[in-house]
Image 1 (cartoon, rainbow, N blue to C red):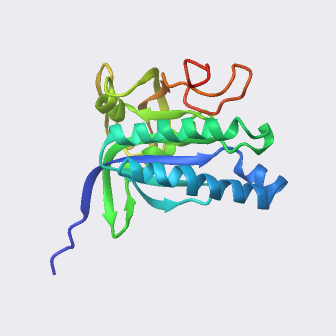
Image 2: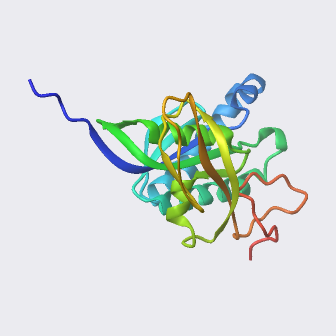
Length: 218
């Protein structure tokens, strides 16, 4: 009997997670859940759909989404963080929902509506390394989006990422291959900051992708 062929495709995977969700739930379970549901319904899910993405897994305090374009995935993340900054500017600091977002472009395994594989795992690892309110992208994503978005990227070099199978990752200065049979690889990663304006004042904690200008929008 012939072995069933595994379905694969190249995809940009966006992993998002709420910072300090467990702590917030301990303090105000009902209020935190209501604010998180509002964020999903009014911002995260609509933006994902707007940029051609598909949420394929909910993680309780976050979500995983698939995009056919790295540019669309990063633009979506920028819009989400900008919109979240606007929402949080009206909230007390202890009630703010703050996201970390990681994006990776890689090969994934498709099983029905679900997606698995190293491409997904790498996005989740980037999200885990991400600073609150920021977006971190892999070198493979940066190669696709550089010069195509109104955003600046800080090269953070290479960081140790656990439990990711070895693979070649593209950086801004060439391609480096990780050694096989290691429990961790060194993956290039970058964070992005946008030129988009924010309604936050300089004294406001603004959980968005590093915004250069904090002057109010017209």
